[in-house]
Length: 221
Image 1 (cartoon, helix red, strand yellow):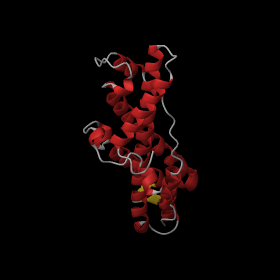
Image 2 (cartoon, one colour):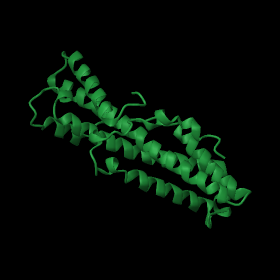
Image 3 (cartoon, one colour):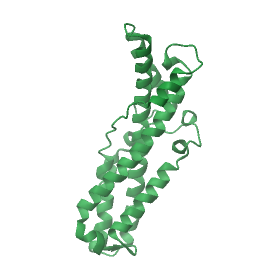
Image 4 (cartoon, one colour):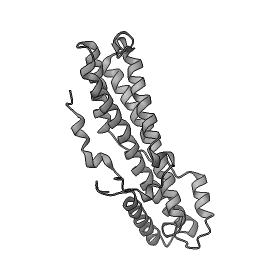
C-alpha cells in the first residue's frame, strides 16, 4: 500500500489480492475458496483501518500535549507534559496491526448474499466485508494506541509523580487520562469510523502514518 492511496483504491487493492487468491486456489472446495477470499478482504481492510485509527489517537495526543507544554510550569509539570509528547511519538512508530480473524457473522452474511458470483472479491458482499473490517480495525487501533501511550507515559513519569505532580490543575495521571479520553472520543467519532459516512466515497488517505512520517513527532519540545 502506498501513502497516496485513498480508501477506495485500498479497497480495490484488497479485491484484486482476494481475487488472485481465489483463482489460484481452484483445487480447494468452493466453500474454502470463498472463506479464503473473504478473509483476504477482511485482513486488508482491518489493517488499513487499524493504522488510520492508531494514527488518529497518536496525532491527537501528541498535538494536545505539545500545546499544553509551554503553558505548564517549568520543572516536574513540564517534564510530565514532555513525557506524554514523547510517549505519543514513540507509540506512533510502533503501529503493528494484529489482525483479528473474520467474525463468523461476517462470513455468514457474505455467504448469504444474493449476488450469484462465486468469488466474493467480485461480488457485492466485498464492500460490506471491507467496510466492516475497516471500522473494526480502526477501533482496535484506537484502543491499542491509547493503552500503549498510557503505559509509556507512566514509565516515563514514574509512579510517584503520577499522583504528586500537577498539570493544568490535575494530577499528572488525571491530566494524561483526560487527554487520552478526548483523543479516543475524537477518533471514534470520525464519520467513517462512526458509520456516518461511506469510506468508499472518501478521498481520505488509507494510511496517513506513511504519508506524514511519524518520526516528525519526535523532538517537539
